[in-house]
Length: 365
Image 1: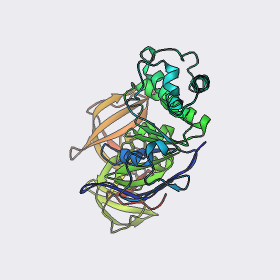
Image 2: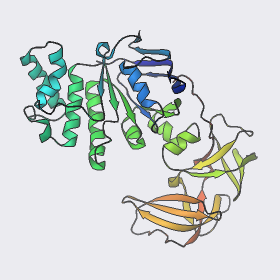
Image 3: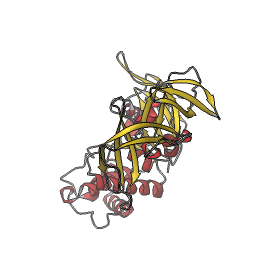
């Protein structure tokens, strides 16, 4: 029911503008793979090349080992779900789902049976004869998925399909999509600018910037071991410090900053001569009354305390006026410090890393 998808040194030019630059990655059969990045980074262009709406300027798109160049969207083993879903409002739900089968000449009884089967799969039994207008946003999403699955694609392509939903429904649909993908075994290629979606649903994530595939890895790898400053900054929050590498101490790099010398890890491809910044996550930072010996620390003043339910974000201003964040679990027995408190921001060497800001083309993934 699924095929692998290979992007072999794929580039796409629109006139003088290069939208995608030498992307090289193989998406495994049955994998849930997300392309994550900001608007204009090239991720939707990749989806259009896989679906057949455009052919790459350079390189090849292969599905199941077959080169797709010159093969149109209707002849590829793919199905595409758009952000606006494009459901037919005058058709009942089951006819929406079976539309692709009708185009292929399948008789009505078989179409209806297939639609009913898919409605059970997406947990909408009994909705077959409803009008689209009678459905909620989440139910419409499921109908769009069922319609795409009706033609038995080997690869499902999803272009930010949850972006129009409210937060709670979006979170619910993440779990639904993941469950449907696992039940069907179809290869899912998902496009999003939402890091939460990508990390929560995907087997692997490819982070894009300015047409370049910056890093491919599991959600854990992308978040905990980013390859460069862009990936670290785009996926999650960071406290960032500028400075220079001045040596080594106890297995860590010595990093000279305006606040003193910090000990930290060297990131991928980074050496003493690299132009780097230090990155540390807010959840790996703490606030303490005094500077502990042997730990990285700097004096700060609490400027804002943002309560967000299960955790609290504490914003602090350093002596140069730059804002840093500390994230703590919500514990009513340990109230957070109040604005105006003068404390020390402390972080361990093992949870900080030096990364280059330079975006580099990664090798084959």
